[in-house]
Length: 159
Image (cartoon, rainbow, N blue to C red; front, side):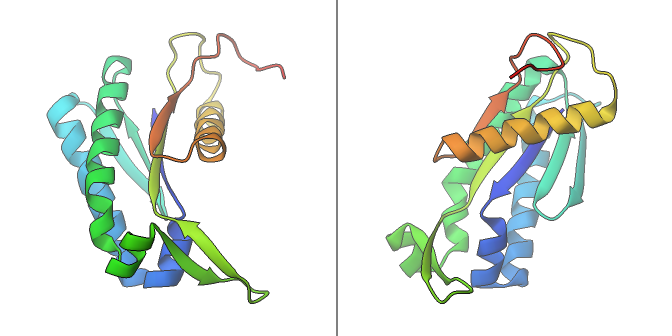
């Protein structure tokens, strides 16, 4: 299972409004659908549970290939949703509740890839928990669009 998340999407909506935000969601959905169609299998599945979150299910062998295509196509086209001044600047400006000007990075896509290659799953909640951990790791540690694949060898994880 692959969990797709758009970093800074709520801030994008604050800056550009829900209509343009919906366009980004439709664009992202189209990229995922196209990548799965080209590189996945007929049994692959895509869901959009809420907001800027997507989940797709594919075979473990295809997950990284599909994720790489989504990331490449997302990064190649996402700037078209920004006004020229924000594209040139490389970030958007928003005012915080305290009146401070915030520099918000441009949208990035993060994909958490969860497989049962190293241990069996106990229940669906475990899969979601791991996907969220992987996306959080990508968001906190890397300043770019990317995927992170589960590589820990056993569950539960000990800190």
